Amino acid sequence: MVILGIGTDIVKNQRIQHILRRHPARFLQKVLHPTEIKQFESKKDDGQISRQCTEFVASRWALKEAMVKATQNRSLIFSGMYLYKPHLESAESATPNDKIQVKIDHPKNQEILDSLGVRSIHSSISHEDDYSIAFVVLEK
Image (cartoon, rainbow, N blue to C red; front, side):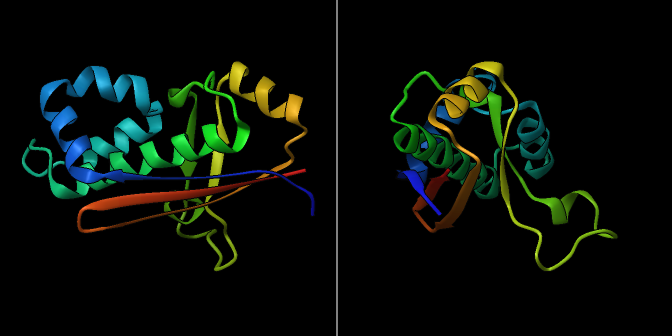
């Protein structure tokens, strides 16, 4: 295994909550993939942005910032990548070995990763009380 880049990011959930209250639609369109926007909407509590919503967006923000750090390229399009959890898509075909994956869904992002020779992206996200964190390893 050849590591091409690593990145990590931590974000204060309150910061994301503040942005979501002021400019929710604009922020979500800029930061989340359409798949993630649907997931976000399903987490709302009676149409209100819940703590779970805030943690969801904060962890995705941290993941995408970690990707920027791992690639050393600020040109990545945040809405052109998303966290894919196979076990949530199809419970019948899910296995314990299913890995959470970062999916790339924008030609510019794919071009950046291809130019670096990235063959695999390993990631982890977590949130606890006030903070969300993500870690990314790019592998050749």
